[in-house]
Amino acid sequence: MTSDFDEQAFLVELGQKVRNLRALRGMSRKTLAGVSGLSERYIAQMESGQGNVSILLMLRLTRAMGVRLDDALPNSQDHADWLLIRDLLQRATPSQVAATKRLLSGASESTAAAPRVALIGLRGSGKSTLGRMVADQLGWQFLELNREIERETGIAIAEIFAIYGQEGYRRLEQTALQHLIERPGPLLLATAGGIVAEPVTFDLLLGSFHTIWLRAQPEEHMQRVREQGDMRPMGGEQSAMDDLKAILLSRTPLYARADRDVDTSGLTVDEAAAALLKTVRECAAIEAVG
Image 1 (cartoon, one colour):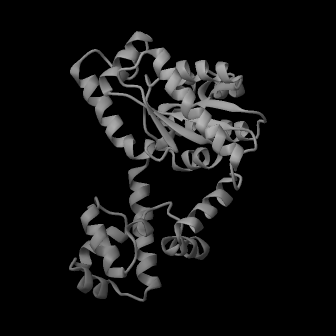
Image 2: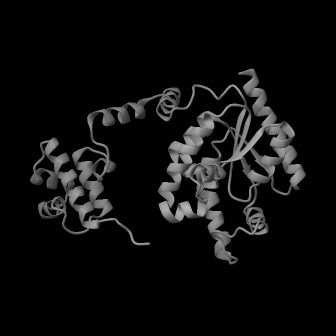
Image 3: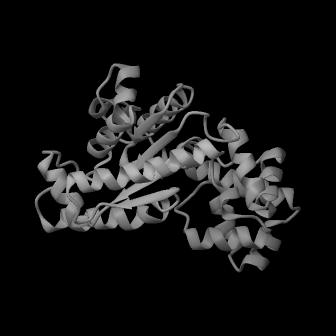
C-alpha cells in the first residue's frame, strides 16, 4: 500500500512550528543556539524545512525553549484553551480526571441501570464462546462488537480494514460502541482484542460497562486460535508465538485496567464458563447495589 505521507511538507510545517515557538518566546536564533548548544546554521536549516531532523536534537531545542516536544510537532494542538486544559489535567486529582473523561467521552456518570458487562482479551481467550454460554444461562443479550460494526456498515471486517485501514476501523468501532451504550436491557459484550489500543474508545468502554479480562497462557491462546481456523496474523512458525507474546506483553497493562479478570488457563470450556458466570454475577450484584 502506498503511503500518502508527504515528508517534505512535514519538515516544512515542523520548521514553521519551531520558528513560531521561538518567536513567541522572544528568542533569536543566536539566543536559542546558545541555550540549546546547536548551531545557528542548523536551526536556520531546520526552520526552513531542509534536511532530516533528529529526535534528540529536537528535544534539545524544545527544552531550550521551555516547551514540550509534542508542542513542536505538526498537527499538535496549540490554541490557548487546549494548552490550558492540558496543564490543568496534569495537576488534576484522579477523581477530576475521571469526571473529565466521562464528560468528554459522553459516558454516563455511572453504568446503565441494567447490568452491562464487556469482555476484553486477546483472540483465543474465549470471549465469544464463553460469553455466549454465560449470556444464555443468564437470559441476557449477547453481542460481539465486530458483528455490530458489520451490521451497521454492511461490510465485513476484513473489507473494512482493506478499504479504510486501521484508523477507519477504529472510528467505526467507537461509533458502534456508542450505539450499544444507548441500547436498553442487560448486555454481555465481546470486544476485539485490540480495543485497548484506542484510548478514547477503551475509556468509553471502561466508563460504560463492567469489564472482565479473559486471560490465558500464550500457548493456549495460540492453540485456540488454530482450532478456530483463524490464523491472522499468525503463521505456524516460532515467530508467530514470539509475536503473540509481544502483543500480550504490550497489552497486559491495559487489559489489567479491567474491573475483574478470569484466568482460563488449564480449564475446560465448561469450567471456564462457570468461572466467568460467577464473575459476571458478581458484577451484576454490584450494579444492583449501586
